[in-house]
Image 1 (cartoon, chains in turn brown, cyan):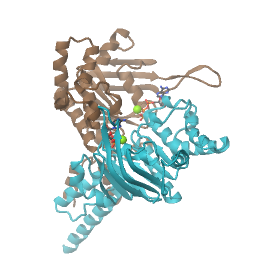
Image 2: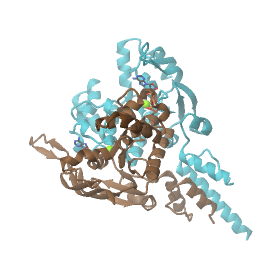
Image 3: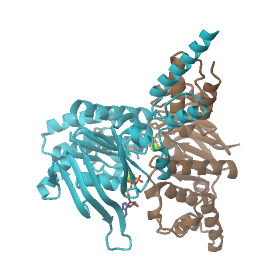
Image 4: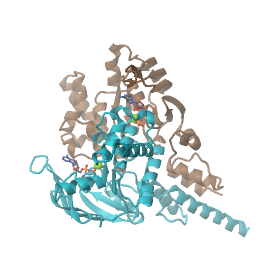
Length: 283
Length: 291
Ligand SMILES: Nc1ncnc2c1ncn2[C@@H]1O[C@H](COP(=O)(O)OP(=O)(O)OP(=O)(O)O)[C@@H](O)[C@H]1O
Ligand SMILES: Nc1ncnc2c1ncn2[C@@H]1O[C@H](COP(=O)(O)OP(=O)(O)OP(=O)(O)O)[C@@H](O)[C@H]1O
Ligand SMILES: [Mg+2]
Ligand SMILES: [Mg+2]
């Protein structure tokens, strides 16, 4: 089943044209089509301004399509009575770890979502505890977020989303500001939530290495989905990706360089292990 | 020395419950034309440190000297120092405030007393370097995507033609092409105009590719200071403080463990490709010769 269906969705932001003084609309999403299966781990790539964050906001009903149809967990956001249920089920984690945490105690911050859902206090406690445990932050329940590292703050932000018991989490460049350890903490958490808790994960990123972790990669260009497939089939198209302002992981780039020099090496190698294997068996 | 920090300490919210010692006894010299990278775990003090360079933060104790003069000696000196040392903030929202992108970038040059014509030329040039399209010039900076905001913030500092360019995570949120193009332009500014570059980054790959010198911060202190090779050689020490070496060096290490005769202090795909190619073709011609 598809947890998210985006059918021919068009979306533009309104602005006032200086010359004519008329209200105009940008063409940000142009009849975009894509589906995300329940339980999938999907990476979304695309140039700056291609429409990824806009698409993410359509997916959790922060923005509504101007045309076409979005169906999120089977619900149409154009029907206002569905919006609450969609937002509860599709959580978002953003780029800046400092902007996402409001409370001065970690567990209060995590409880914020369920409190807003008017869940009775005795039911909130277990949710908060299990969310913090899920992201490995249970020992920081009483800590002040100001004293956490970036990766830890992002894990608290993820716990805040988890406490709403969502079916899907969208990470909009949630690792962009993190050091290598913090990035790994967040990605490991995303993988765990996907594998163990069957939460659908949508990872928007500019790190090609992160996209190799996904089941499927979707490339957005100028408001349309222009490529889609498993990481190996996407990253073996280096020229197409470069034309779309993207790149391949460094290990894949190395495979290309070696094959360009005339070595007989597959150019869909993504990881260090695969590369070591290929070079050990080289003859 | 162009820029010098002498025994700098910094404490946030001193004397309150939120007191936080962010920098401890920093001593640092940076010479004209150097390309210095600063790396360190989140919260290690990088942003706090670089905000000292142009006087946005005043040390709790210790001195910051630009071309030998204490920048906090008087207001006038502080002002001229800020014009010569351009700083791109980690979060572009902190930097963008004008009603249009064009006005935002032109603000610096106009504020320095340039004529409107001169400021326009610099603004267009800076916007072109960072890849902002003409159709976005009249937009509000807040209507830009995340990566576009960052580009605009970088342009605003480039337009001031600084003598020292300090960039705090300038490539976070940029698409791969934007990242490569902007970093290339920055490197070119150093090579052609001898502008000093100070780059804070979590991308070990970018650091290895660009910097001459790498400063490593941990818990408010400088814990390493050396060339790219000297610093990234210390993989164990780096991983202990939340960092890593560039990806390719882990491949080289894995190959060495499998018995390949390769150096492990290799940090870019291009270098690795040359080494692996030479190794494999040499092996082949040897085994070919034996037959
Ligand atoms: N509030 C807004 N008003 C007007 N235009 C906007 C607004 N927000 C975004 N846009 C425009 O919509 C387009 C898509 O923006 P979006 O933020 O979805 O891009 P993105 O793919 O997430 O980019 P990035 O990689 O830089 O984060 C851009 O051209 C942007 O300038
Ligand atoms: N305004 C502030 N008030 C109190 N403490 C602060 C403030 N700004 C930063 N700190 C603290 O000072 C320390 C150093 O922060 P700084 O922002 O310099 O780190 P950083 O190395 O730039 O981290 P990152 O990689 O996350 O950008 C951290 O512990 C941080 O929580
Ligand atoms: Mg975005
Ligand atoms: Mg910082």
